[in-house]
Length: 164
Image (cartoon, rainbow, N blue to C red):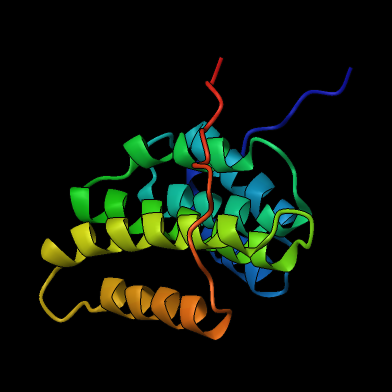
């Protein structure tokens, strides 16, 4: 059987750049693989953890089940409460957008995901670093999506399945 090879610690900055580029050219699976290589060598690398989380959320549109849980499992590895809340909001916002693009789920699920995202962005906003309005901009994006698509709450609440 083939075994994975470890990258060197010295290659991590270049590897992160490659992972970010793969995300930009819509190759999130390749970005994810690189981040996993980095985290194997440096398990506490904050940048690789964030890029991995974003690469996973880039794949929400494909509808793979369990991806939200995989992304959420990375949140405790983030360094501060701002980051944890901000990226929790990103996960929810991207799931909402994926639901909007899937006809089978309907728009009401998207509304609930946007609302959850907004709750996280509001928490992040209250603890944001000075001059960082990213959480506010994400909040505004959620509001605009809700209005643009005329989204309303669903009748039943999404219940996340247990991890195991």
